[in-house]
Length: 217
Image 1 (cartoon, rainbow, N blue to C red):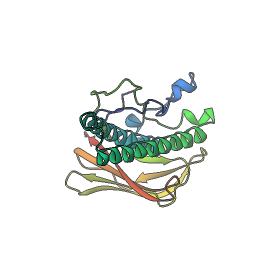
Image 2 (cartoon, one colour; image 1 turned 135 degrees about the vertical axis):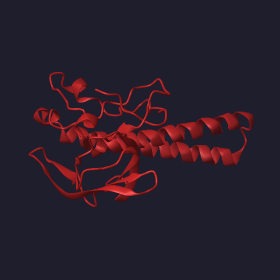
Image 3 (cartoon, rainbow, N blue to C red; image 1 turned 90 degrees about the horizontal axis):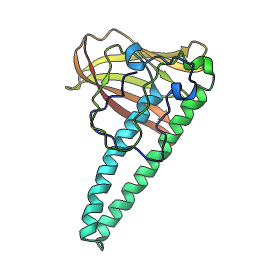
Image 4 (cartoon, one colour; image 1 turned 90 degrees about the vertical axis):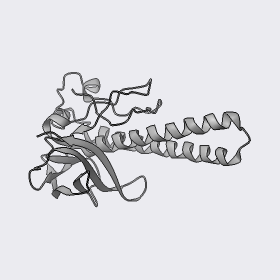
């Protein structure tokens, strides 16, 4: 499997299992690669997005801790640090929720070999400087484990031009997953952003997040 490619180094949450690969859980199951098949599990993408956010939060925490070392009584910095630590805790809870959705959806071993996955994010120590964008060259469809209320997928260029939109949601074979497919083939080469909108149970509302990637036709 290819390594998950991210445009920034990731500081992993040391206590959080950012998704174990199916190969780790079931050694005799050959799991398809999402980048090679063009079929991505939405929860994998969301975990990757939250991992990036965690990296940014850790960078801010490190910076503030360095400032506090020289000014330990600064109440403003203390408040900022507490807010960042709270955000990181929320991030952890959301990643755990997503991993729980994945585990529940793929508990049937027969389904594991039919659902393409991104490889697991490398464990600590961090940071890792070996990541670049995801490869969306073969992007065709996105699978959804769990609630698909309000679900939508759009692909943009760096100039915010919409180059791909996804159609109606349907059942993905007999796996219990939902699938949304691209309407028309993408005729574009270069850096892109895939934007996903969905109802997210941990916040009780519709959210939108984005993942950067590239298309190499």
